[in-house]
Image (cartoon, rainbow, N blue to C red; front, side, top):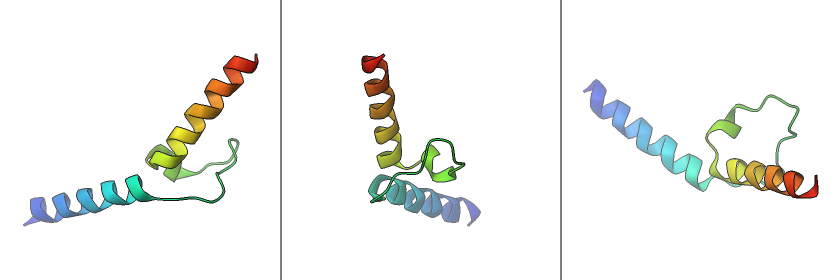
Length: 56
């Protein structure tokens, strides 16, 4: 029973992380736990790092 519940929670968590949308991104200097699993924030921060390395 516990494995089924864990599986359902994992699927819901994954779905939520894939479909989460933010109008405003968290500041880089602030602690923000969802930056570790939110697809939109991860892609945004990768893009920011790539742009920063191109400008330097």
